[in-house]
Length: 118
Ligand SMILES: [Cu+2]
Image 1 (cartoon, rainbow, N blue to C red):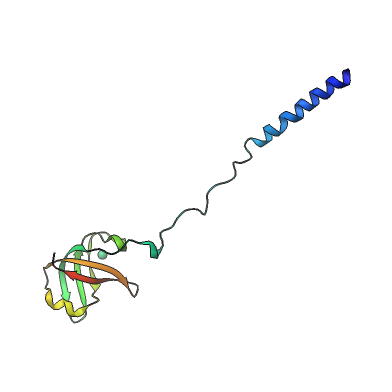
Image 2 (image 1 turned 60 degrees about the vertical axis):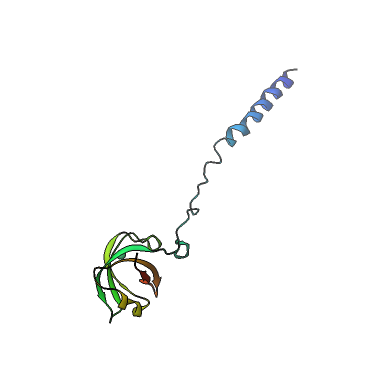
């Protein structure tokens, strides 16, 4: 009967061990590489932005605008010069005009693709 009792004690110890090892063995996984980066193709669609024409150069096809935030270009409000896609449309505007301008990236540059009166 002494052997049987010893066997029970050993078996009990072995049965308890795996549970102790299992706990905490799953802690090594993290989510590196799972972040979503905004890509150039996932920006929102262009929409008209309120702006004021500070300078207009019809010959060069450039307009300097004081513009509000341009969400689709990720640009905050500022004053800067833009090329204009449709130069002919510039004859309808002059410096000091308030406009609604739509911007998009053309040939890698922020460009006015549409401009109209508010
Ligand atoms: Cu700007």
